[in-house]
Length: 360
Image (cartoon, rainbow, N blue to C red; front, side, top):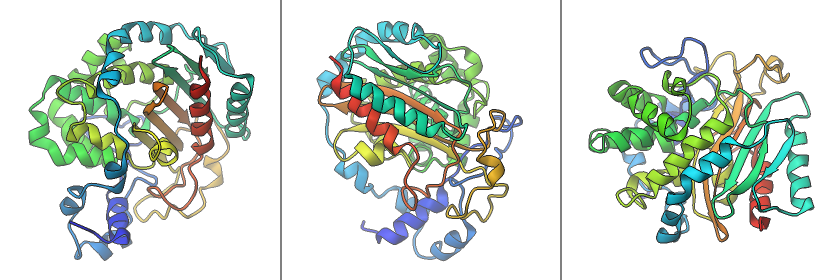
């Protein structure tokens, strides 16, 4: 089925949603939402009569069709070493600033470029936290990896994987919701699955990866570190590359996570599996236009303000081997789906990729 690009974009944009990091956000109640992952009523009313959402999400996206293939056996070969990788992640220094770790190193120029990008993103007082580990060299780089940050919708990636790991039959029951929650970051679909399976699946993954089970208590965790999320992604990597899941329909959804800077910047050159999360910081969201300026009070870098974020997490399968990364920021999100404004993390994503390419 072929859909006109304008209609496809409008419908996907209309379905986007994101869980708030408000204190009262939990799995037992409706999630308060705001930001660019919310629908605009104008777009919804214009397109409902033309094509249904179910038809759209069943149509494979251009990103999924164009995603480069990766070597199955090579990807699987890193699974057996993942406990060691987690130990390395646990031991990464968090003394402040940019820190390289592991036995391999990149050039001074690559390190300097990363440092410059971090300085740009924190220039106005905003918080930034990221960590990347290269699975081939078991080396990487981190910036403030233990800073408490709001996960936003990045939690959906690891939670949904944990559900299928514990309950494989869940996919047959909630196939459309799994896709919408990953590709469109749809909150209603995510909450339908969360309400059905609760926190236990993710608690199991927390136990295996050495992450406090408190991470799994809420559907949208309020404040957790990039280090902890990276550990959970090491488990998701193993799951996505297991014999039952690798190159499956479910695994393919991660090639087209909405608003992922890594997908946009690298997805045409390397296979990627990502999940972004974001919040605009708008006071109201029901008729949100992401092209509107974000209120000044949400752009001041106040560390107590968690109502704005631009996050990205995932795996990039490069020619030198795969790397796993987590990037959290409190920068207000202003990208509508994959359009309008450049994602604030684009340059950092490229600098991380360059750094990994030089590790030796």
